Length: 187
Image (cartoon, rainbow, N blue to C red; front, top):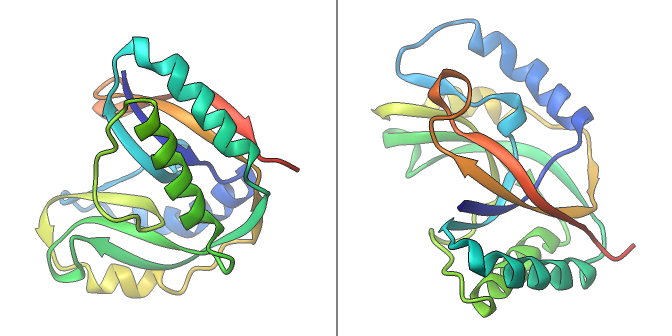
């Protein structure tokens, strides 16, 4: 199973961001593949391929981590690109987290995965929502300027999800996502 751990924005935030992104989607660019609204999430830990026999312990440890977390406020704000603006492969919306709770949650979920014997892949945690992937490295200065003006409604993160990603099984050969488990924070 190809898995990741994430916080998923509520529907009101997804709809608000979608309203801001939609006019940009209407101008086709063969180099930009816009992410589907239903794929928007904040990845805390990318786990890659996880043997099914490890998922039970992983789920138990993620549930324990969620129970130690209090709900916290987040807002989508700002923009950026990976690996950088002049040579972007990914365009993203940034995240405002005044309490650093999301960063702490990323550390605890990564630690939970490690203790379950699951290797966490990827680089340093950068909170973001992927808006688009680029077919080749391009300068996205104009896109970053546009999305840097966006501010979503503030929302309260209340749970963490373990999500399975099946490459090529979604619309237009994108990934299909299925929530494997969801655990509420200590309220």
